[in-house]
Image (tube, rainbow, N blue to C red; front, side, top):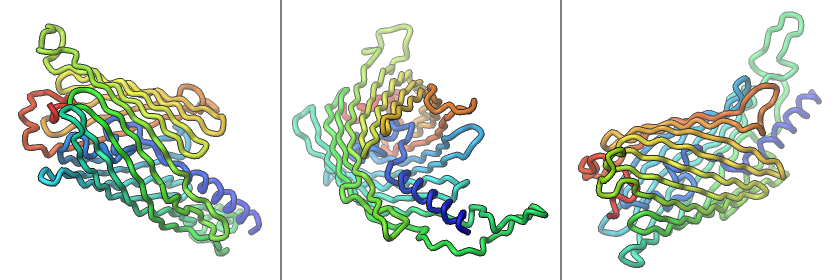
Length: 336
């Protein structure tokens, strides 16, 4: 029994450290609202979407992540409301975390060309350690190999946490090709400890984003490119506690198809992890469907196993004029 409690103690410490860091989506350039909720009001439209992803070692435990969002723009009142729900799960270790967030985004015209979108967010989170999915020593019959369904020893550690979360963000953008964003999450630093006698507050997250879009075929003059061709560049620098992250995205939009590459650099307590990703998406009138595959560039390679991630996403644009775009999938189309 002593060994069991040492194991549980170490497991709790591990997940408390994991809880202190936010899960980062690889399709961040497609759903920037995951990092900065002000982007839900970026183009003054109503949208919805879902993202499903897995990451981990090929021969080990996988982290599953599910994300869904919906936002609506109230034209007469110049604001948007958005709701998103995120769920992360590691089934092998019985760990899961879920959070739902409500966002209010205001639209303020600074000049004819520039717009300011501030936002405030409130969320409700839940984290859980399911000890029933773990196998302990007293469950194993060493003679027959039979594993009992439930351990006889009680576990005196809270396996469920509920907390409120508060955030704020802002986006500055023009009507043609440029934006800047700043977001702060966990302003209230919610308590995430499984042990009531030890505190483990979630670290505040701060992030800066910027993006630029270039029209590669203005006035459809090039005979080699589709009429609506764009190069989209996006980057984000994020810091949370001792962890910092730098994400770079380069996306080529050719009519109703986009191709992209992305680079991710993570630094945690002096340890650096780098990943390279590729993406592909297709636009079908109001719908965009895509995927992103990222793989390790060496830092996480262990015993011949590669660390990688794969994400699928689908987004719906409810703008009644979306069909009239005729293949123009510029992010700034609604503002021009």
